[in-house]
Length: 461
Image 1 (cartoon, rainbow, N blue to C red):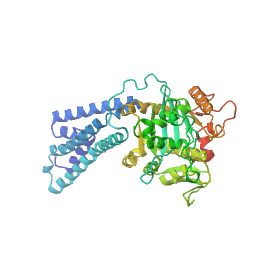
Image 2 (spheres, one colour):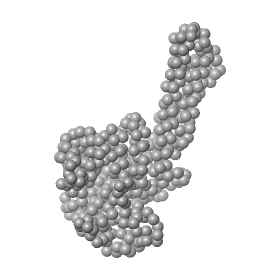
Image 3 (cartoon, one colour):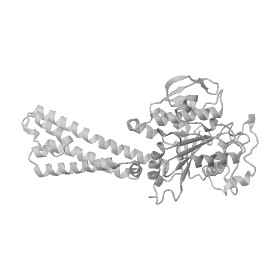
Image 4 (cartoon, rainbow, N blue to C red):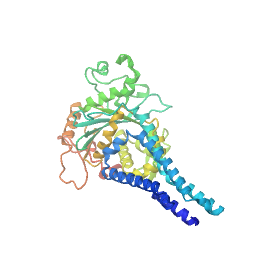
């Protein structure tokens, strides 16, 4: 081997076809073993990819540590392969300057071929740490994930806890009820300012407030006995629960479930300030704002009307501001931002910004979903993405937040669940259906949340 181009060429071939350089150098057995092993791995990988589905993706969440170890091993093995391929080609027979050139080439190829495996290992390690922060250490697989249930009900909350703020206010209260067989989903939205909240009989909060959640009006007429305060009130009064601490989540699950006539399985609370970090990590969101949105303590902030890319802070204030507006308009804007986030987040963007996204999630999510349930919830979420979605918003005129008709709320919820999954008249693609009471026309509380709804207040592009 006297030509440097030959050494470089065989090295490059070995990077994509391990064993090629060894066969060229006369290391026949080693070359055939490397080539056979490589082809076996490739064929196995192709078989896995062709059969891959959301279920496999869910199970992979339990294998992150193993994936990281295997990926690091593969990175080292590939690095060593290129170095050994270079050695067996006997580069010392070349002139000194070409030894340097081919050696540098070998080092470059060794790093380049090992890099994808190293990145995979790093991503798996980051994912493992992120999941452990949010869900804790896995206690093992779960036998029957649904335990004979037809639906899973998850309480989805947006809270505003912060280092400079005392307590948690759940400003966004939604329940996703998902059919475990079809993925058909009903999304219930309750206003944060719901008054006279009722608690399940037999619970400590019902014993304290048998006729509804009522507290003395605070300074300046501030109310702290609305739905958004239930979590924090329960946390601040452990004496109601026999001294047990941090009962806010369980209390709110019971309360919302009782309000809708459902059993809430789990909750997820997202820090709305951290939500802005997620949007920044994704590079912002393109949203069409139909009218100027003012925000700030002194009305000093403004999100102008028009189509533009909003950063995290702008998107957050657009979704949260009630200046010259109300809670119900804000609920529609929040839905717009969520829809834009879902539609504009793709796997390529997540992969290229993976570390930033993982870092942004630190400290922003609380949940009681068991770690072992993730492998079952991932395929269910994939199924729900292409299934029928029904949105029910309990806002005026469907209900009056000051004097809620609790029977009506449960009746509308029950009929929405019963109707969910029934094939609509025309279904050229996955649709969003509407629910209305028999005594009144469809209202903003029961309108489609697809593109038609987005155009009412904003549009996710």
